[in-house]
Amino acid sequence: MSASAVLVSKELAEIAMAMQASRTGHAPKAVTVVASDETVVVTLHEALTPAEQMLARSERGAAQVEGYHRALFAVSCDELRAEIQRLTGRKVREAAVVVEPATGAIVHAFTSGTVVQIFQLEPHGVATQVSAGASPSAEPAG
Image (cartoon, rainbow, N blue to C red):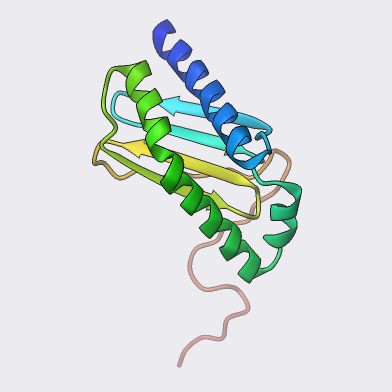
């Protein structure tokens, strides 16, 4: 990544953090920006307020938190799009948001017509077991 791309990512991260804090009264713990030639992904880490975190413990509450942040994104997206254009010199063609109530992560993906797949990893030290096919306890069909 070039030095100018690093500076753009850093400035965009600071802008996204300030915007989130201004709109919700709660600053994310951190902001990560990953930019390529055609895509910018902004992740707001631990961006939910303590009240939203409590609400998100239930399925219904998590849906409410997700809906709120989607609506917030819809009304604030133009400002972030303008900042991306100012910093990169390129217009944003599409924008989407993913809210993960369980972790408090909010991901803003700005794409240029491509499919963006975002994979959020577990924290370090959390073991994951993955298996393919039928589970060992499954009865054979017959």
